[in-house]
Picture 1 (cartoon, rainbow, N blue to C red):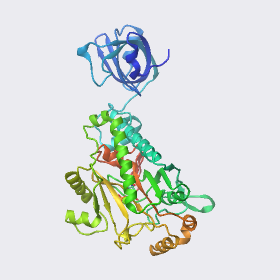
Picture 2 (picture 1 turned 90 degrees about the vertical axis):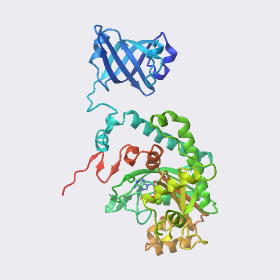
Picture 3 (picture 1 turned 120 degrees about the vertical axis):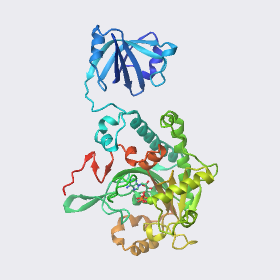
Picture 4 (picture 1 turned 60 degrees about the horizontal axis):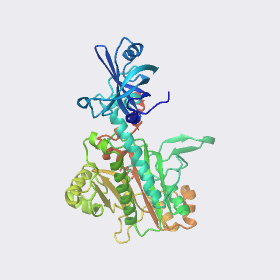
Length: 438
Ligand code: ATP
Ligand code: MG
């Protein structure tokens, strides 16, 4: 008999159905055996009236995570027996159990675990309601990002993950042994390629796997991550990019909120707060004056959190832009603001107190770009491939990059980015903990 999904069972009251899934919980009450079965669409309770029947005896041998196919009759539950978390008002009278796979679990699913135990057992713990909620939200974020940009005529492209040089000319890149004894690197960003693609399509976006080799041990850094980038031509300045990014963030929040109200309820969280007007914006110096801290070239994590408090209080916003970082601390392609020399047309977007995005206007003039590369102490010859795009004519352009895992983590207020990363790679771990020989 064909499989029916659990969420469809309500249409089959009084009828015989076949469902397949995992045993979530088994309970025995005298002769009765209860199985809560979970499939991709939901959960349902199945009752086997007697452990003396073959079906009842089979049901009684199962344990959590066993994979089964069950046949039964769908029936309505008495009013006083309805449970919200199971499939509400129906249950199944089971009369046949087929065991597809047995299972042995290390602990109960959904137990409170420390992060290392959770990560050590990821092939199992990823099945928990909480983990599934996190990664369903993440899938919607990417989908919403793509849809939002497509609606505005951005073309998706695939950036390379193997590169011959380092995109930023600074960020720590992982080395790869390439052919003919040549050194290649894992990309630290899709930056140079998305600029090249502006020359072809004007507006492009990509969701790229990138790799960062800095030996960070924080709650916000990974060695492998997904960057959601876009880049667009014919802009006036960085404010066009900020507007396009704000539009994207509002679309993502709307889609996530619309599709996943149930998840926000389970997490006991509000949807991100969006201001009625535009996202609040401060120049770096203004932000530092507001916080009463020194004019350093960058913000400390603590400052980012305090700016969030300010944005919430003054503007009802979980988002705040900080602009005009000093040019000395930003990459060679960053555009200097002619009205604020020494500072860039560049921004960070903070979401709930954490930088989730950086972007701005880029240098588009060939000679100016070569000059900037030299000023940074880099060799323009190493960027000859990229520089061709500028020799053959580039419009004023800019773009930005959002870290998918940071956005997911702040969306669900997860304290550690690793909880928002399916298989986190960091200083100490690739799936399993690295062995450190002293
Ligand atoms: P930070 O200063 O916080 O280390 P960054 O300024 O070096 O980050 P960018 O080069 O601006 O990062 O990258 C764009 C976005 O990609 C960041 O805003 C962040 O969301 C994400 N990102 C960058 N590096 C990492 C990392 N190591 N782990 C997780 N996310 C990252
Ligand atoms: Mg940044």
